[in-house]
Amino acid sequence: MATRSTVLITGASSGIGATYAERFARRGHDLVLVARDKARLEALSARLRQESSVVVDVLQADLTQSSDLAAVETRLRDDAKIEILINNAGVAQSGGFTEQTAGSIDRLVTLNTTALTRLAAAIAPRLVKAGEGAIVNIGSVVGFAPEFGQSIYGATKAFVLFLSQGLSLELSPKGIYVQAVLPAGTRTEIWERAGIDISARTDLMEVGELVDAALVGFDRRELVTIPPLHDAARWDALDTARQGLLSDLRQAHAAERYRAGP
Ligand SMILES: NC(=O)C1=CN([C@@H]2O[C@H](COP(=O)(O)OP(=O)(O)OC[C@H]3O[C@@H](n4cnc5c(N)ncnc54)[C@H](OP(=O)(O)O)[C@@H]3O)[C@@H](O)[C@H]2O)C=CC1
Ligand SMILES: CC(=O)[C@H](N)C(=O)O
Image (cartoon, rainbow, N blue to C red):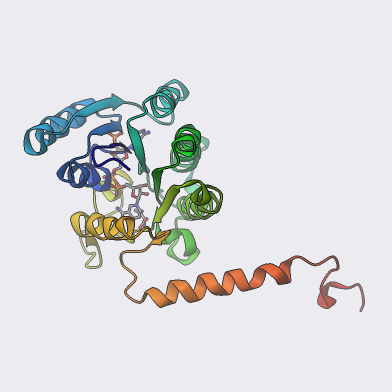
């Protein structure tokens, strides 16, 4: 990958996305910043241009709107300088399952899964052709913890992990690096936006620490990066156990316990 390859970051106006933007700018990468809040994107891009002398473009888009999503897809398809996609834009769940409306479910699922998948699909063929590039998908530890509540949000994040694992299997032999980053609670605006009070929380990670750790995983070409997990062997054991199930799942006959009988 060229040193000055361009990085497109979704959800770059605040929190994790804005911090990725800062870090990649410091590394000398040009940027395309995507979010709805144009004023915030412009302010960030002006600062990064000044601090790091990189080229920063702003692409205002509501990724739940099909025309805006299509414009970002077009940019990813056509701009050969973009070699890294940070698929970060996301919203959390406000309230429990029975409090959801059709609109809130639609927005959550569309942004966290459909938009993320379509953007990966827009850039992947070009990266495959070039034989290099990276797709980073921001999931969450909630994706394997239904016990944490937030069933729909967690389901979208389980999707992100599964998709990343699948894409890595398909694309890494073609030179594409795919990373799933699974933060736990991190101090950003996402909580306030979802109406969740975090004033008493003492277990939230600072966003700079989260992104710096994610970038260590990126530089090591890790498939799954879980910054808050101190013992990496715990994840390896879980994933090894999952893979161990695979041969047992492909059976032509139902298990003994499901055979008809008294
Ligand atoms: N903070 C945490 O505790 C955790 C966060 N995550 C994940 O990290 C990612 C980033 O979240 P975080 O930085 O915390 O939260 P923030 O709320 O700070 O950032 C979310 C970003 O997404 C953008 N965004 C929201 N809705 C849309 C939309 N419809 N179209 C385009 N952009 C949109 C926002 O910009 P704008 O409003 O300008 O559009 C903003 O830039 C999310 O995917 C989240 O699920 C995962 C685990 C924990
Ligand atoms: C940001 C959230 O709402 C969520 N609890 C998470 O940790 O991913």
